Image (tube, rainbow, N blue to C red; front, top):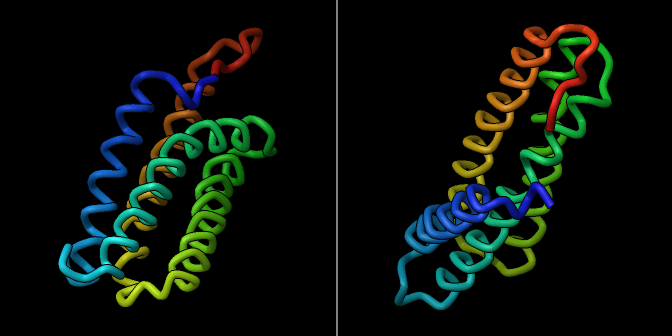
Length: 135
């Protein structure tokens, strides 16, 4: 499966460390139990989102009509769903600094997902008409 490619596994591990560490610090540091929970929750969610984002963005890109929808809609949909899921999960776990925990990783996810769809659009324009775009 493309989501489990070695490069993506490394990216997921880095996302776990970066955004889990960020959530830990944003919620008071390791001496606070709720900060540890927030860090583990955010790190795990970020790793999973990292594994799925490129696969979902590519699949949506190839199924949508028109260049504007193909570029803009996948990042909006993916980040809306992931942001909502993070909000629910952190709300249920009573994360103290909820917004500071989820806004930075979601913002970066949007920028990265937009970069992916712009790259796919550029690749698609460079292919001859008889060759389908690759995943």
